[in-house]
Length: 255
Ligand SMILES: Nc1nc2c(ncn2[C@@H]2O[C@H](COP(=O)(O)OP(=O)(O)OP(=O)(O)O)[C@@H](O)[C@H]2O)c(=O)[nH]1
Ligand SMILES: [Mg+2]
Image (cartoon, rainbow, N blue to C red):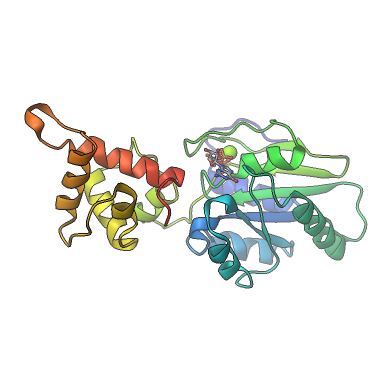
C-alpha cells in the first residue's frame, strides 16, 4: 500500500493515513498531554469526518492524580500503558464503538495511529496485537514509513512516522518529549537550566541538591556529587547535562 519513497514528506503520509483510516488515534504522552496535542492533525481528521480517539500513552509514568486530572479534557479519551499492559480492552471497545457509530457494522476496521515522534505509536500497536510486529526504539524518528499491522480479524493498525506541528520549533518541548534525544541536544547546559526552571525543584530533588537561582551552579554541584569530572577535578558539565536529560526523558526524574 505504501512505497518506500523517501521524498514523500511525513505530512503527505499523514494525509494518506487519514484518508485510508476509518478511525484515527492521536497518541498523547501522559507527562505532556497538552503539549503533545497537534491541532493541525485534529483539524484534518475532523475535516475528513473521521472519528478521532485521544490515547494517552505511557500512563505508567505519571501518578494516578495527574492522570485523573487529564480526564475530561478530551473526548473520547483512553489511557494506555504498553509497558504495564493496561488499557487494551477499553481501547479496542472504543475503536469499535466509534467506527460503528460512523460507518455501521464493518468487517474490517482500519485504524490510523498518529502522534509525535517517540510518543509510543509502534509500542501501542505491538501491545494491541499482543506480539512484537512494529519495530520500536528509544530513538525518536524510528518508524520511517507507514505500515499496516493486523491485530485481530477486524482491526488493522496503520503505524506511521511521528509528526510534529509544521511550524513548531520549541527545542525545550522537543527535548522534554524525547523528540530530540540526549546525545543530540545542542547546548545541553542551557537545556538543563531551562528544564529546571520549567519544573522547579524536580531535578534538584532527584539528585539531592539544593535549589539555587543560578542553575549553572546547581549543575556543577550535581556533577561534583556524581564524580563526573574532567582532568583537574573540574565538573564535566556537558556529560553531566546529557545524563540529566537522559534520566529526564526515561522518566527516572519524575515531574
Ligand atoms: N514507560 C513507557 N514507555 C513506553 C511506553 N510505550 C512506549 N514506550 C517507550 O517509548 C519509546 C518510543 O517508543 P516507540 O513505540 O518506538 O515510539 P514511536 O511513537 O513509534 O516512535 P517513532 O517511530 O520514532 O515516531 C521506547 O523507548 C518505548 O520503550 C509505555 O507505555 N510506557
Ligand atoms: Mg514508531
